[in-house]
View (tube, rainbow, N blue to C red):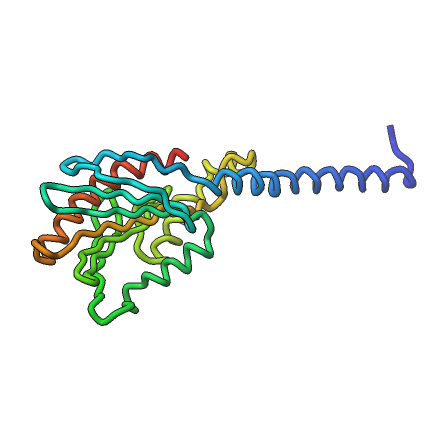
Length: 216
């Protein structure tokens, strides 16, 4: 059947409109559903840490998180977890902890990398030894924004993730971060010993959290 010219133009307009509508749905609908999914994260009240005993735990707000307090013999250790889901707040947080611009003269951060874990920072501040890092949903942990963005382009922008993105199951770039901060007092240990204690605890902590964070 050959359509007359007066009918052909409206039909083409309807067809084009349908294509645009379908494309818009595929782009906007995932944004709505994945934003809702990314807006929350459930922190367990108890997290096992071999060699340490959990003493106390409490929830945190703005950004949401949880504080865990452990002890080993007489040595206390505090671990603070914060969940940040958006790109801009994470970028600001990375800049806040920029190792090249310490917040005080005594705070000089040492950045290290561990295989199968990623990057993390160590520093001394107010007679406390500290370790901090951002657990990524894909790729190793990061300590600065450049590392974080590199992970997003390396691990998020993959062909296998396009279909889940179109169906609203995942975001194209997963910009969530689990900010982790471990600290112990320097009363009975040297900075070198404190760093070793924090690193050993961090490696175990990361191995527990990473697969659970990725599955959410």
